[in-house]
Length: 154
Image: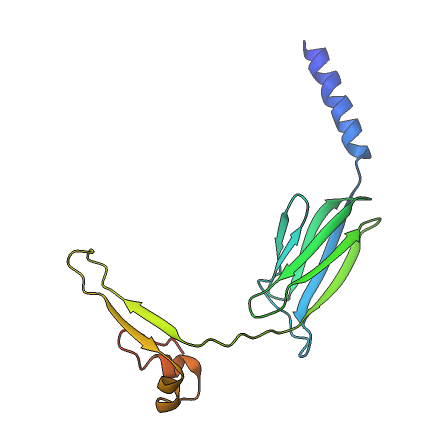
């Protein structure tokens, strides 16, 4: 029995040595400022392997070679970047993400205490463009901190 298990282990390790995997390394940065984007998510399909960029915008993942992979790079406030790659060797890629912005018409802030539903009073305040015109500040968070129950951590 030991000989069979030993032979199977040897055969599997021999076969695994022939399966080629390549290292995909890369950097994610802002297209305009060239600053790194820490925390950018890199998704590699079809198995959906995830990697997250570090403080310097770098990421690394090992993938099987010679098969097509769909690669998506995501970061909040930036456009989704999608590309297709086939690895034939260890590869280093640089991704430059473009910023995107969305205009919001209004924000609704709900506040309640954490003691329970029956005992808590729920307040709601609607914030629209006129609120920000009246409470103009240096930043969005400073203006929003003027709403009751909202605090800013600037």
